[in-house]
Length: 305
Ligand SMILES: NC(=O)c1ccc[n+]([C@@H]2O[C@H](COP(=O)([O-])OP(=O)(O)OC[C@H]3O[C@@H](n4cnc5c(N)ncnc54)[C@H](OP(=O)(O)O)[C@@H]3O)[C@@H](O)[C@H]2O)c1
Image (cartoon, rainbow, N blue to C red):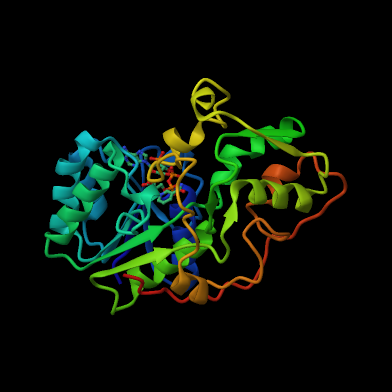
């Protein structure tokens, strides 16, 4: 059996894809720019590759069965890298964004959107079987946006408190990716993936505080313009949530997708007790709380579009 190549293997979703592929019995090749720092399981074949240096991709792609593609490099690197990937890959599962969801948040024109569309067009017209994953907000964004403020004190300043999202756990995105990489029947599918529950960012912060036993955590609205000059975590949405443009305060809620809700149904929201998103990174200052990081994870991908 040829290995499955995971591009972005050391990232939030890629790392989960790697472990779930191993658990499913697939040989895995992980691409990283820095193998020495990859910290991946010993069964994984680690290869050096850089999306901005296209000639490094050939050896990574040699004799692979399928490719999981996460793109976080610059738009200028798309064409040469995608040419190589699409020429050699036998199947491509691309971690995209909900570009076709008829919601103002996902319909704003911006550079990242254009880049995603360019990648999708190239993949679609390549002739290789493809599957697009379209997750909404990652639950893991909370680690970047709010964890530093919660660790540092009792006030979370945030510009988008009223904006609802249905955060999805990266393990669920990975579970869908693994099925699309290993199984027949997903070619040409575009899966919109959300968490089970739509919550405003204010509600998400409150849930995290409650789970941590931090009743004194309060939220303060930060004008969006000031957020740009504020702490790195407070200005994260536009700059680091790469496929998710900073939500305009007036946007209609990006609620959970009905079919995702059915198939990724968790009993609680992703920040509830037991979620790894909530526990270790926030819990450092929690008083005597202990949190478990296991929960059953039956996942069936949904054909949403
Ligand atoms: N955050 C959200 O809410 C959200 C929602 C929907 C979609 N998305 C999309 O999800 C993707 C990000 O996924 P993620 O959070 O799992 O990624 P991530 O944690 O940011 O990791 C991306 C990985 O890509 C690798 N990488 C970066 N530049 C590279 C290059 N030039 N060549 C090769 N590899 C490179 C890095 O690995 P090495 O350093 O080891 O090379 C890194 O581990 C983005 O495309 C984003 O738009 C995000």
